[in-house]
Amino acid sequence: MEKVSLPMIINDLRSRRDCLSLAHENLKLESDNWNKCIIVVSLATGFFESMKMKMGWDSNVVSLVPIALSSIIACISALIKFKNFPSQMEILLQSQSLLTHTLTNARNEKELLPNLLKEYNDSLEKLEVSLYPDIRKKFLVQSHNNLISIMKKEQKYFETINKIKNGDYVMRSDSSVDSNDIEMSVKNQSDEL
Image (cartoon, rainbow, N blue to C red; front, side, top):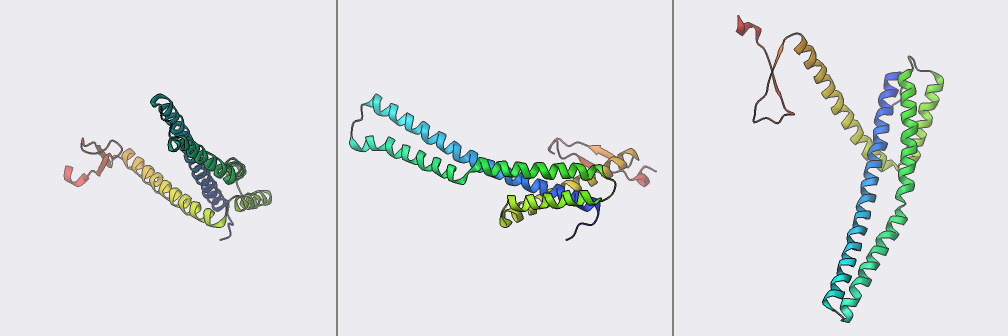
């Protein structure tokens, strides 16, 4: 869908920037999990070595366990090196930075200018080379759902504020309700008469 207005471009940039943030978050989580795995296996190796020395275990099988654990650590390290997490995350951060810069410029404009359109297209190109299409699709869908949810909550929030200002709402707190879920009910003006 071609974006022909400034608000459409701003919304598109927001969703694509959030898409990159979600992809980066996912990649960082995966990298952290692999690194945690290395830490746990390393600690297990050290623990086993200490137990072996303290207990005086000298059998051939017991001697092979630390070698096996060290091999597992080496395999995980090689996998992490192969996946190249830092480089991928850097590319995502650069793309996200470009989208954020373009979004800031778009928010500061009053109308859609040719230079902004060029910046927008450059940002889209950077996004498209940063993520594979299937991954981009996954995180764009998630980003769109998040933004729709946020906009619905904002709309409800501002509607509620207006009704409170007009005296149409009474807020009640129920001890069985979570503090985040404050019940609001409409005052029935005719019942008071």
